[in-house]
Length: 142
Image 1 (cartoon, rainbow, N blue to C red):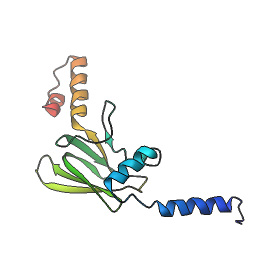
Image 2 (image 1 turned 120 degrees about the horizontal axis):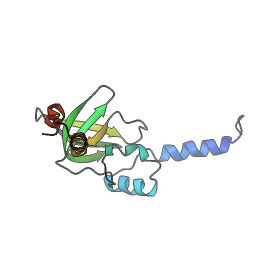
Image 3 (image 1 turned 90 degrees about the vertical axis):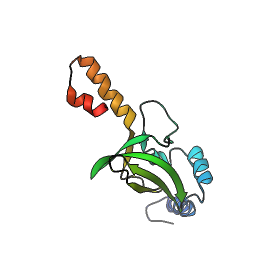
């Protein structure tokens, strides 16, 4: 028995965590996310204005934001291997292909993706509300 009380419970929780390192396939991953949405809340890295399934639309542009910077990317495809979600992306200004890998067990993802169309719509709405010809803002949404 542990010195802090609840030792058996703690050991059991660790054992369960060790068994559930990561799902073995994309289908199992989706099933796990549906069964335990709170456990995988941290994987909701695709942000949109309206309610969505959390799955990005391929071909759509997203503003990727991380502590070290940001950039505009088009999402081409997703894959899942060994506990990692792998995104195939194209950088919008250079057309350079890149990959971003997301560890399903990392509670603090290094990047979030905001749908670019939503950013442009917010800027356009702000321009219309102000009824001012703000060329800098309008250039952003062009």
